[in-house]
Length: 363
Image (cartoon, rainbow, N blue to C red; front, side, top):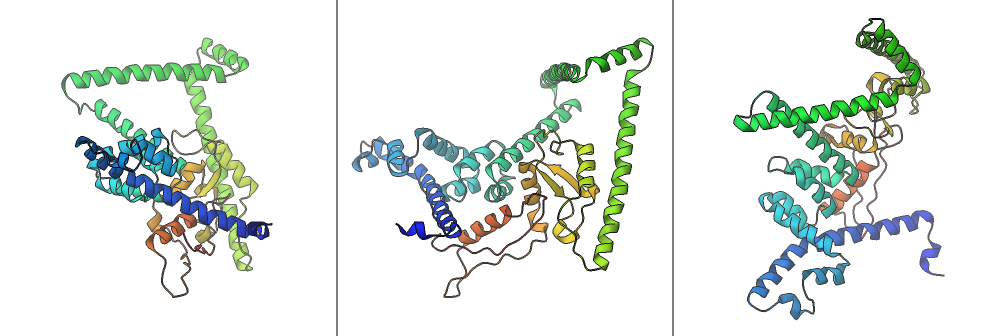
């Protein structure tokens, strides 16, 4: 029996977490060294004396494969990023120092500029890879919308304006055809028949449907108002008798939220399934399940929302373990602790629950 078989589940988990974290950090550090390794190899090759050949390697690709198990594609991506970040010194420094993984840097590279590189670095350090992908997608969507708006206002000049307008018009026509086909697929034969009959009788179908949709919105808002007032009244009653508000979101609140937003993320142009009910007013502070301050979000947008304005959040202090000598951990350990603490904030009902963070040794 080896020593690991005597470990409890918690001890085994902590041991795996410690070495897994160390392995990821070592891989990032090694990746950051590759651009300099490649540069020196190319420099010595130009004078007929390959630096890596003297060490027994045919080149940087074999060097990375034998020492760190990296594929040719991974090494190529690292070298391409290093060249791309020449005009973005702070992002290049994060790559070379191994502070941010290559996969995350590759995703933010397409939207990185001198102005936003610091913000992107901060998000890359605390967000998951999926959340970063969603953030980049949102940035691109905003940029496309702004470009369309500028072209419509005629900010561009000459032939370029005509060309942009023609492209926008063609794109709009394609989107309209796509939406029409989708609508026809959604409507049942019975509904289609009734709409056609109303149209033949001279009724304005658009006016009828718009009136019904507006009435639906008014009914939902009225119900949300009633439920919200009821929730606040119950909360006040519990506070009077010293009974804490339950973290469980009431069923009637969930139902009215689903009636208004459906089962998908409430973020504009995001059709992913909603996995979290996000409290616009932090539940840990306000202790409120008012449906008027709840939003259904997908996992990525929920994570983004919690880290969007992180400095303004009223986070509880994180307890950092100190060494026996009383010294504080290194900056890298503090970053890891903050990242772990941030990830632990996202519970099923979007409730922030901080626990004591104990930093494993030898990380």
